[in-house]
Amino acid sequence: MSVLLILAIVAVVVLVIAATQRNGQGRQQTQLADARAEAQRWYERLGGQVMNLNSEEPAARQALADASERYNAAGGQLQQAGTVRQFELARESALEGLAYVRAARLAMGLDPGPDLPPLAVSQGAGQLTQPREVTVQGHAYKAGPQPGAETPYYYPGGRVQGRPVPAGWYSTPVWKTALGTGAGVLGGMLIFDALFSPGLGDFGGDMGVGDMGMGDIGGGDWGGGDWGGGGDFGGDF
Image 1 (tube, one colour):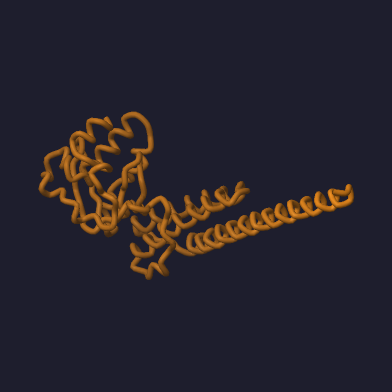
Image 2 (image 1 turned 90 degrees about the vertical axis):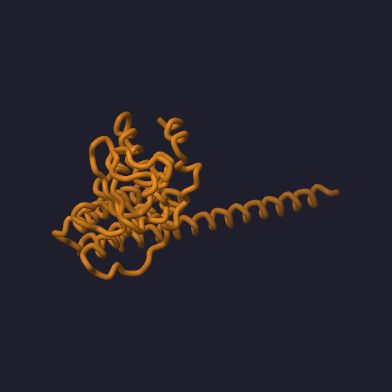
């Protein structure tokens, strides 16, 4: 094989490698641009809703405050994003904000608007379909599918400390307590167990185990491995 032929083969290989790298870089840039545009689209839609809606109704006002918080978070994420994953996280924050907007519009008696893409964090969490009330450590807690004077805090569904918390309206934002540390976590998880676990029942005596059936939570992943009974309680705490 002559030297010229070897050089020609090497040149062809180099050209093929360079072309492959350019194509790969081009795909990455396209994916990045698409992710940026998608996140920006939902962020701008959320901004329009946050700026134009206001209400004196407590549940709607609280939901709009939460939507505004997600709007600020998404804006900060967009400013710092440099990868597809980071833009996806900004998109998720914007969509979560829009879920709060839909809740606020429902509380105001308005059309909630078109459906949103499902939130990644709420997959398998389900949603409340009936009101519930329990007493934990001397304090009453309520939750249900509709906003009200006693349930002004909306949660779009998700997992807290690894446990599914269904979408619905709550008397207090117990998910924030359970994301804390120490006694706050214990208190928050006790409330979740009392509200949703079929095996633990009520910690205060207002509701028996027979009333804690799972027929009032729809669409969730409520297997025994997630919530369990007394054994699960003992293992967690």
